[in-house]
Image (cartoon, rainbow, N blue to C red):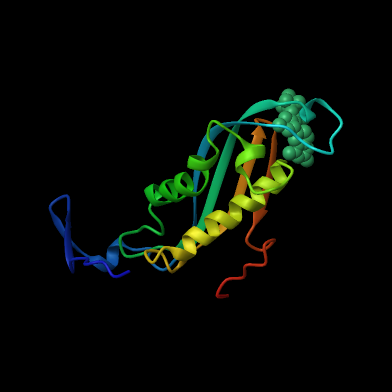
Length: 160
Ligand SMILES: Nc1nc2c(c(=O)[nH]1)N=C([C@H](O)[C@H](O)COP(=O)(O)OP(=O)(O)OP(=O)(O)O)CN2
Ligand SMILES: [Zn+2]
């Protein structure tokens, strides 16, 4: 997206040129974290998690993209909007075995589904053609997480 950046801007009363504002076009990782509370139980599992129980899940969404002329690759607020619409609105305070597509609700299965949801949403965003999903991490407890990366999902930079 093209932004109107004035040729000269003022800092502490001194004119500086827009070229001095950059690191634009550098690639950076941008991350945002969320929590949500859900109930679930595991199938095909002998142990306490076969019984109904709940977690405060923590989700970390890491995106990768070129910095624009404002110094932003993707607005943190837009990551929050996408994650809320595609994940938290569906899962927060819900029974996961009912609301997720048919799967065993392990952290591994859920994080792959979340990657697919977020990746699809980002591809549909016309605002950020130079940004892609890099990694998604899902903590089930403070000491246990599953993660998936773009490379693991077969997404290569420059691919369609
Ligand atoms: N590889 C996986 N192992 C387990 C999963 C999973 O999704 N992937 N899930 C569970 C249960 O859902 C359980 O609620 C979480 O397991 P665990 O980390 O063992 O929970 P604790 O409360 O015991 O965690 P501590 O932080 O060690 O107290 C089981 N395994
Ligand atoms: Zn659990």
